[in-house]
Image (cartoon, rainbow, N blue to C red; front, side, top):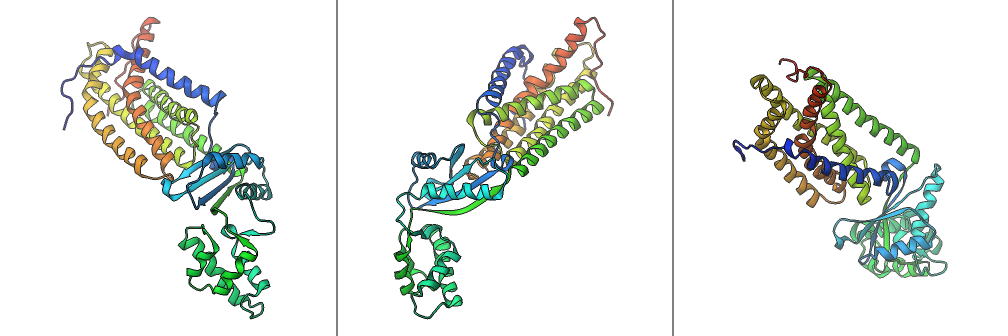
Length: 392
């Protein structure tokens, strides 16, 4: 199947337009990484506390920011999780301390900041632990059976299970527990004496130390570097060294624009985004090799032609294959981006950007580098390089 037959597009004739496009986006991303948002490392790489919060109503993110600011918290990020009807938010606190106590304190500050208008001397039932509820019941003894650890432990567990598993982590009022299986009515009636019900519940907390984040940053950088070096060695051995240089420059260009986009939009770069970038390095390299292989074959068949004409011919001959492969892959990752949810949003966004830029760069960056190198050798009065590569 072919979309294009016998095309004759002068891609190299438009190289200055391609160069301008690449320079604009590369420099914009580089400026953002150096002077504006910098590289927006996710909590996986910088360390910190992630608090997953569910509200009983549609949350007002501006109000949440104001409350966190008022509590003295800085450098936090707020992100909606899932559909708006879920009423869930992810609060990312950028904590640089190395102690576990400092990270726990950051978590408590977030909870305290969100608990506005707290009744004096009362505990939030939506965020109370099993142990807190059980200890209260044993002290209060609403069933008049004495401090029965087993009985009140079962009552406390039934309350927590109903709150977290049935009501999604948030109770609108203590009266909802009347419908909870395994909770005595006398127990429910006694809860307002010590507990109040807030409009949110913390569903999960993830804490990552900055030392672990630093190690992950180093490993991510090394993984990317090793993949680029491996590509350079392979293409230098399989073709000629200039092919390897062109491919590495192309992949560096793709990575710079992708990471630059994340920096410009201030979107966190997480482990899944790094996985997507490594995937794109292989994808872009594969597309580039297809063009290079056709150039090598045509050089043998068109020895009397100018290299620029051979490169143009090769790109046009592989254009249909490029559009088919890249188009189908792009549709797949676009569906993943649109319907994959928040967990895969960064991963799929990196793939969407990378496939577009990777396909573009195989045509507009990699191949012209070969011609530029040949022209440079001619200007220096050197014999044109043999570009055919090693025999297969």
